[in-house]
Image: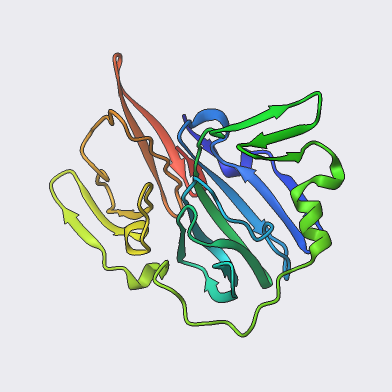
Length: 252
């Protein structure tokens, strides 16, 4: 399945200090993982400060700059981020969000898709419960973004030295292969930033070469996004090899 981010529907998320344009680049075409493009307005926040209970998230900054806001429950810290940075947020590790700089920030957000284990929703009653806790759902005034907007943006002291979970592409050594048919330089950004359940690699395919031998995964789901250049997606089907042209912004 191929698409292009110029053709994907956009939506606006705006509540108080939170404002940005969102695109689900994979939509329902992927099952266990997904990726969204988020363009945060200058000086605004991408989402409420939040902690994922099950999903691991990886962010890649396409353009712009801002601050990665993170909290371990006691202190709220900020780390400067910009183009080429990769951020890994493990499940249940820290609350996080992004605050855009004066030029805004454009990111790809990769995340797992997990079932809401243990959560029971009563659509007629407008309530959900988990174990011994419950909460009202569905009412506009109870929307998490509305409540976050009412709470206001978190206060951040001066930006701190970046943790190991934030790396820049230029700081990750590439692994190069240049064979007869396969030629590439690969930087394993996810591993460098400490990902456990998912991963993110930046792959530069050498001119006229394949990025990998023809293969089929039995378990893993993969998403490719072309950040620069053009080429062809090759699919080995029963009828033979099928080629699909791809270019900057193509999603596979």
